[in-house]
Length: 606
Image (tube, rainbow, N blue to C red; front, side, top):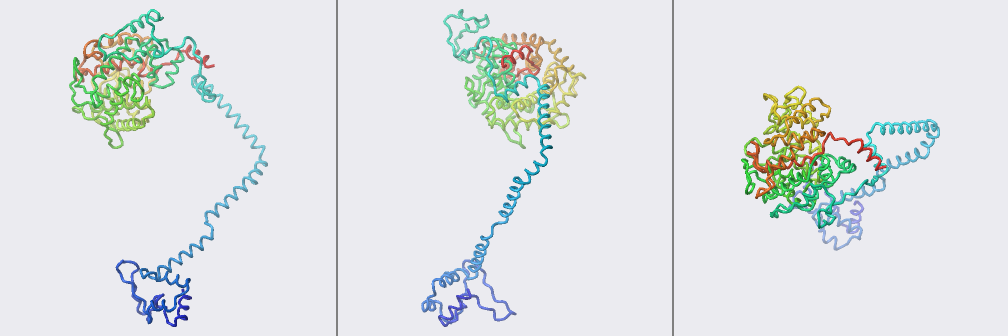
């Protein structure tokens, strides 16, 4: 910049340095007055002091292109002071100079790469050569020990797990089924004469059953197909259990479970026409209402407990294997019901409050438990529905936070001291969530065990009371408590459990108390054996006999106890259907395949 000023002086004879640089201060004692740099767009920039005007200087002796470029950059159009552009040039030149030096990280990376190359090409091979005898010894020991561990694991693992392991390693082997093939009814043509079929009397009666003139209750072909009493093969039973707790709800699993655990064509027909009645009473918004049951049925006393009534009805469809995505006659019914429950979800503190609008205080946590069972089972049957998983997970969080922090139970409102009846529904909700892969807090389960311990009617846990401080045990609460104990981990050889199950078996099914029948039936079903066969024969025939089979309420059951008269015919019908679905709704947790089954399956797969 100094060169430009000197050249301008020599060529024009006029000292024009003041036009390019700021004037020198006259005295060191008084600092020059500074002008703000672009502080205000309206601020005036002082004109340079010179004897000769700038335009005449430019006109008299135009600068050379290079000088004009520098001068123009310095003065511009008069909008920027010269100091700013000087700083810009200096920063630019510094950046240009810095570009010639590589960044420090690239130098470090190059050094590390060189060290790595030296290590792998020279140092490591040299070390391995010098220690090759020790390396061979270590590798040989590792291989031998690994092989021994695998042999011990295979020896300890049960046969079923061993077979699954080999199937993972070698790939699944489709066994060739022994005996006659099971042919789906939909893919066959019915003969004109029923006598041409090699069927037992029950099957002939079912196929000969004609429509009584009401088209609304005509059974679909795939519904009739589920009532066929086909022999359950050993392989079907094993496959059913491998699918988990809800393995009986698939098409094959349902047919297998009905045959294996004591269902019949008549019991399945009762389920079917019961589902038809529930479908007919569903409201336009997808809900069910305890007080809106249609002609010929008894309404309940609850007026605003729609989430509770909707959950009870939906559990019947889910229990029979119908989902909101699986094609079938109830796909839309289930979809609308789940959509209604979703519309009532209230997100609170990271949890999902599913209670909705309720009458009074009592139904609160009952509804939360029922709705959580509903969304958890729906997700367990349709694992790809991420929205259901989220709602189920949040509903479980709400139940965990609503637990009584001192006694470990649940009652009508969150954190109330518990009662065994409400605890039963929450335990079933947590179990359904676990079956679908939803995590449940171990602390919550531990607190449940503490509550059950306090609610025992006997020291061995064979009976249970309504609340820990209640006077005595009852049959209904004992059934609820024993079922909770089963899900909480009591083994079949537990003395208190064995004593309690035998006691329920001796009492037998109730003619009026359907709430007791619902829980006791599940307890005996999980227990199995002769006690279950005896119970099932009485319970199944009683429900088939008492179902309404004519008129507008066909398929439903009349209320028979105080709970039924309070909640109405939807409540009573839902409990009856769920009880008749016990064969496949939840597979028995104590069920073990007979040795003959295991042997036949193993030989078939070989």
